[in-house]
Length: 60
Image (cartoon, rainbow, N blue to C red):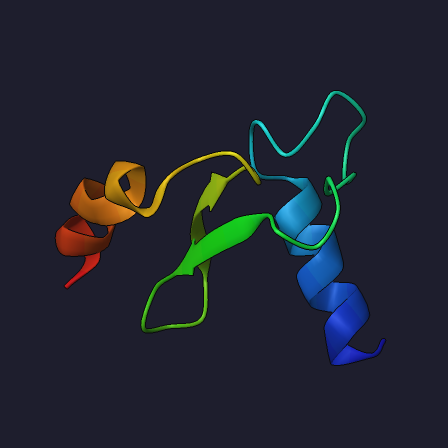
């Protein structure tokens, strides 16, 4: 299986991705990824960078 398909399936398991499992609302959805490459958090297109700050700090 291609790596992009694997990542897409992993992202679809993140709570809050969408009402439909695996649906990402256009291309401004933001993902916070750990150093291991695991998607830890998901933020929607209207979420502000300031709302991501604490989650990013927790991964550093």
